[in-house]
Image (tube, rainbow, N blue to C red; front, side, top):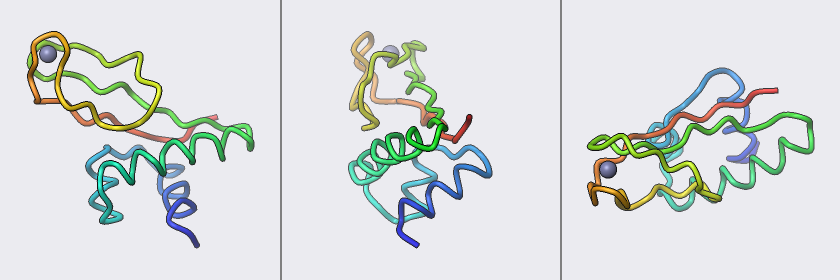
Length: 93
Ligand SMILES: [Zn+2]
């Protein structure tokens, strides 16, 4: 089983946080973002989709809604805080 297949089967069971997933697979944020974007395309072909909640700034509540990729943002564009809340990922129909 590849790392992506393992990730898909985990995410089908329940939602996982970004950091939780990176820890689980012992990979970097960048690698995880890459896997998630591939997974999102792979499962789309099977009629499912990756449920990804947007990253949220813990200081001012800013939501990173317009992000096209899965990488964790460095800082909030509104208040410049680096306290960004981990979003949860899951697989839904
Ligand atoms: Zn903010």
